[in-house]
Length: 354
Image 1 (cartoon, helix red, strand yellow):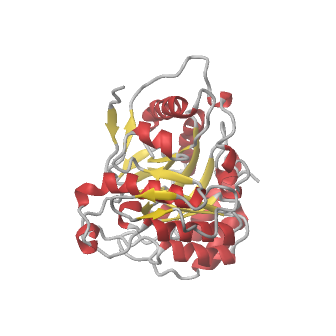
Image 2: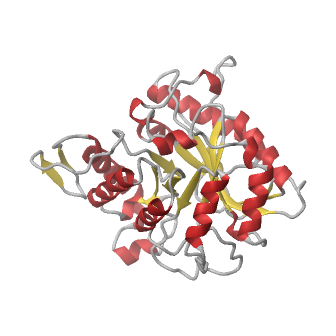
Image 3: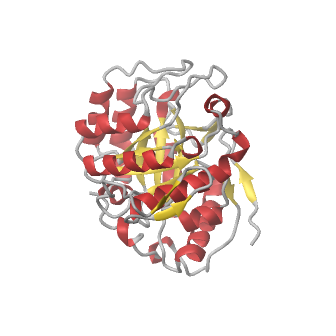
């Protein structure tokens, strides 16, 4: 099957073009996710058919025009986001400061930071958008992920990307052009170690085992949810077969229906007619002071007022999108004001699943 694509500006991700479902098939026809995720608290808080939830990409601080946030009161802001009912806190994987990119995300290493925030929160999901899998040693990542999922009470949602910063790869002595193959290889090792007992396997890049060793702890709910962040140099078909969901850069409103239909089509082919694997969106949000400003594309995301944002999310939900991860760091208002505005005018229409 040949899949055409529509480019997504400034992200390296793509939104697949039309591969339509039956006219009678709707998101509501879909069943529950993979059995191992039906009881996973973090996954269930965020992802259900026919409903959209809202998460926040860290830092919980606006700093337009500056590469680094201050991280002042960051724990209190995380607790406030949880109290207001946001679905998730998402952390990016940016190990080095590259002035060409001018952005260091939330400063702290994401897996370490998730552990810290897990001890300071109770119910909000904690995710990554995403761990740059080709640059990670997958056996240690498996140990980190299962440990964090245990310690957080099943709140980890592991987003996995291939990374878009060329400069990181030479720094780590890794060939940038190999990142697609390394992603598949590392993911296979990760899944094998986290879900099989005393597995026997061999990787061309990441070692192997004769079946005499086992990873502990195992995932507390049978599986650590793993979603693709961007296409990660993979086909949509491969993502639908192997990952538990897909987080795309937020497309324009007219692209949402095609994106939702293409993802559901590939999931149906991969996992059966009624299978459900969530589709999510992510990107920067420049929240306009004018509440009626509609969706307007900016680099890496979009600008909108609160009413325009709500309109966009209603279209996304109707298209089958289950979650959106917003990063308002480019907005001009103080972050606390953004939280209050979203919590009062947008979040009630798209509540997290309790």
